[in-house]
Length: 49
Image (cartoon, rainbow, N blue to C red; front, side):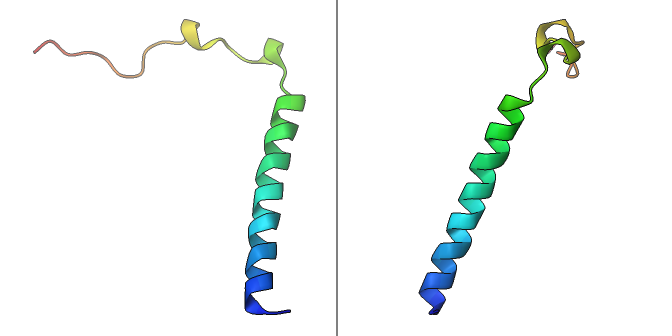
């Protein structure tokens, strides 16, 4: 295989891995285990000017 073909295959493998892991993340998401974002305490405090 030429260098161009190997590069394209590497890019395709990386994209397939990224899309596959995103789909796995969404498919295995458990809403009951996660804490809602709106109830978390603020990490950054606003300071008066």
